[in-house]
Length: 410
Image 1 (cartoon, rainbow, N blue to C red):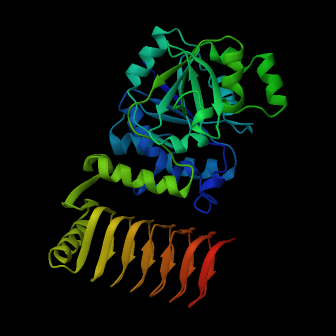
Image 2 (image 1 turned 120 degrees about the vertical axis):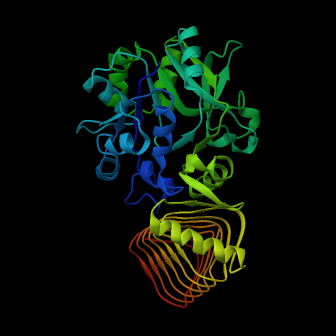
Image 3 (image 1 turned 180 degrees about the horizontal axis):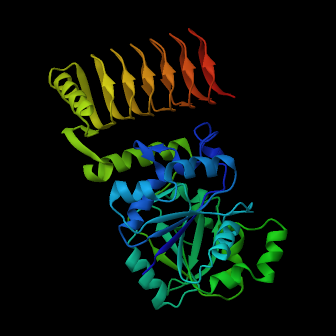
């Protein structure tokens, strides 16, 4: 049984900017809780008890440690008495594989370990994955996912497999499906054998480190394969999302919202189209008000919607495939479609938000139009403004009655 998991979290998450300008990508708000919490719970339910966070840099360390600490919150919230969370020592890492090396050496890890990137969501049968790893006497096992959409293949490393699922090589980001040796892509989820620790500290790998070549996909996995070590693939058949861009973030949000049962979202069904979170007296009263307004037609709902704790919603509001996070206020006449509004926001009357993400503690004025945009944390948008295809960095203030398109505001 696998008991240990390492999450390398050192990347800046630049593709998710502005959401990750001041926040580790591992703890961005996702369905109203930190993203990586979904993975921790999923793995803890399958027997993993020790989680190692490969934090590097101020925001990656601060945001993750301040929320998770040593694991007490997870133990109390989910009833996992043995779960412990530890952190990379105060040593800078050069790539995700170097983060794993530092953690394995510092904590003297001498057993098989699971490694997963911090910006992933995945559903894997850990027992089957581990069994496959042991049966094949693999040095390293890599979870691969069959891509249904061939056009997406150019974004990933694609496995060249033999008939026994041993990996001959990876083709990184092929330009076309014709250049790809298969449609199985590297998911960033690995099992490392006991022997991996000696390999990652070997003179050859240390030479790579001196040259700054310590990325699993680009450097370490190809080196292991070229060295003749048995690297095998295991097909991940459940869901898998790389939350690397705002578009993929929204895709993952609404897939999970459609397909996860309410209990996995810490929610209950309010109506066929609405799940709500919160068990306190105050939240329950707000749920009653929201339900009354839905039944009376004052709130129109369509698709799949998630409403967080202590959310206040006015009248003549339209929600269609939306996520509204905790302590947010939505005033009269607001329309939210295929969008996420994070916690403690205020959306004033007459505003329309479509295909967008609104960051934490943001204030949107009256009669604002926001389309295909990403708004960072603690932003103020003035009345009557239109934002289309824009990204706004945290703490910015947008004047009233402006029309802004196709721009990044830093």
